[in-house]
Image 1: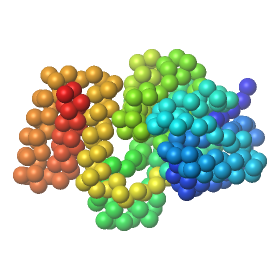
Image 2: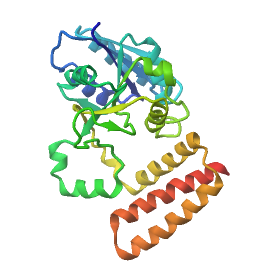
Image 3: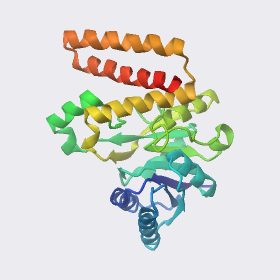
Image 4: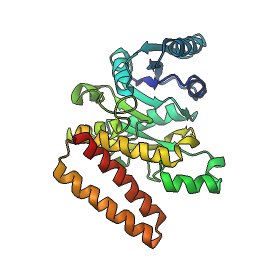
Length: 296
């Protein structure tokens, strides 16, 4: 039996970004080896935006190449929306995209090669930067400082084992969810804000499953420059702290020493002028302070 693929896209209603993503999927290289469908997990915050998402989904469904449908989840939470879509999927492999990426035409072919060639239960695709962004020195300086936009371009060969996931571009064999459960609805956008992919990877590895890298299954990430700011840097690390507190259950006895260490290292690296390590320490300070406040 050949592979069948369901693409699941959770969206909070970014209609123009979703249109770009769907358009890129409809440009995939033709293949007779697979049947594919698209489910948009419509997590828009209001019914007017939800209606716009539904209209867009219907527009692409009428184009006929893929069956494109939506499932509505009005309560906030990316994981909640994805989990609502998973039982409705027909595919033997489920692909997950964030709604702000664009997919390269060879993505589906790369997925087929990966699952035909390697024993892994989960594929991590690459998340790339466009050439015009890579060649912008001011943008690169901000990216190096804040590191608040996800890119995955490890340089590893296909099939290399990984220990974590970045959920904007992954594919999962269907039976994985039967063995390890769904995504943790306490985590991710709309809830604690982040780390639902990291927590899912931990459960996979604990169950003896394997995550493999497939650089040819590539997407481009949208360059949202509002994320390259002190405000978003702080928000991102506070989200990470709250998320890890939720699934790790850290105690005061581990949080406080790490918080104090982050303050000391921030002061030291500020003194010696090491910008990158200063920001790493600053991020850890926000992270552990959010954890401490979460324990209060």
